Image (cartoon, rainbow, N blue to C red; front, side):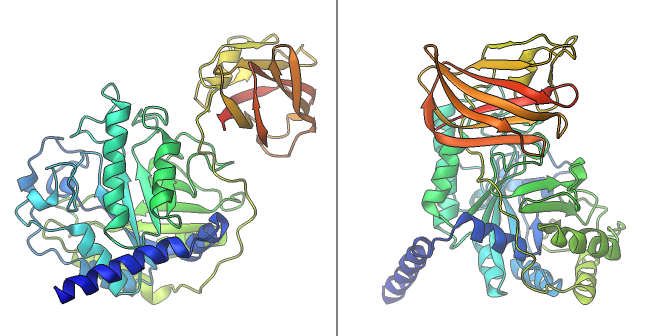
Length: 461
């Protein structure tokens, strides 16, 4: 009983400290970039399949890492001069590798009957490394997938799972979310409301960064639905080391796939010199943290070739401490876009590039103004009764819109939100005191070339 009371007191003190030492988002973003280099650990039920996307009804009994040793993972990460780890607590097939009460589909109901998240967190902290967690919104086992969304019930399940992960395992530096509002997952931030989940995480751990791997859809000019801009290089998402000004993360597996495959112990791994010289070093100089995935095998251990590769990285690269200060940037966009799919009106378009392309939730399609129109305008009807305090306009090309007027129109009354020059980049962004309107209009009063708007966003207060 005495040991229990001491342990409980320690947990309460730790929980109190998490809230007492709240930092600004900018501090957290800088600290994240300063970590420089970490270990991604894809280890879950796909480890015991030939596919990264296994049968969503694959039996829990197949998860059986009989020699599981998270301390080995942590020692190898330390030897590579990494600063943190990030473990796949739940991947797209929905298997949970912690002691969850939300589903029977978890590692406690497997032959090993072990809480892998706990063992991982304790092992990495034991080596002085930060702890991050990966979590997939897409959950094919629980039928949380396109066409099967029950927003209220499934949002509640997600919040329960995140509550477990963020209250039982100490301080979590970042939560990396996947399978949400990406072109391939097709679960929107309205199906599972982003802001509700974001606020839930921050309410549990204010210093936990929320990162969504959504660069496949959202442009690099702003933090759309993420505290850190994240790039999955293997999916063709490449950060610009010359132009990036946002706190960022780039990820890549050292092996050929994210999860372990039977050939991996003898596979050729990515070249260590290349990983250091073409990834870690240049990315760190561009405000970007690099995370390298190393997949444990079915025993629960890192293969010898991966261990040797990471030791070699540690022999030729070291963490030299804080990076350059990150540039000032706008806060993350977390709100619901009340202009999405709403009716539009606009001046003459060119060919098929009609106005609806500017609010179709697709940044690759554009409204194209007809070249003969000297003063193009575009207007959207917004959701009734919604107050908003942010407007974004993404051009196809930077520098085309040079001056413009932005108006909120309600019952014939016009509130001017902006009237003047445009900033130099592709993205024009305006924050203001909350207003209500029936319509929002942009009128381009001076431009250089053909005006093309890829996406126009009006965000609920």
